[in-house]
Structure formats: C-alpha cells, structure tokens
Image (cartoon, rainbow, N blue to C red):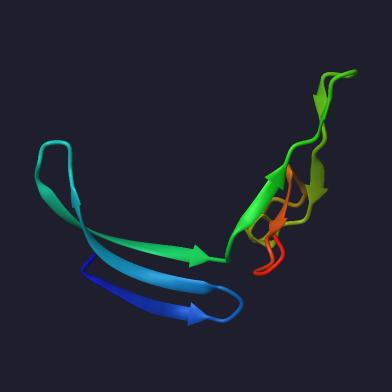
Length: 86
C-alpha cells in the first residue's frame, strides 16, 4: 500500500487506496481502488425443507433506482452488525 486517503467519513468511510499489485507474470503494477466500509454485516438464508425453497425479500435500493431500475430488488435478508452486540 503506497497511500490511503479518506474521501468521506459520513455514515460510512469511503477510502481511496494506491497500491502495488504483483501480476501473474511477476511484473508490478500500481492500482488505485476505492473502498466503502460500512462495518461488519451478516446475511441469513432461511430454508424451508418441506417446500425446498429459501426466503428472500423485496427491497428498494436507491443506487438501482437512479440507474433506471424501478422495481424492488430481490435479495437475501441482511443487515449491519452492532459494535457490541452482533
């Protein structure tokens, strides 16, 4: 890692990182990546063996909406873990 810069620290941390990456051919390459850290999370996928199905939820996601997708997304039940009470 050559450098890290915090771009935003509102609800979560958006960080820009400059790093050196070694490719398969052995050559080094400088890469720039951005990470968005919202903390730890968990997902649960309830399974109903009698019906051989899983439980999913429909949920509005703003990033999908602004790119033109108007329907709620279908996804697994998930959420953030609290610091002291995961």
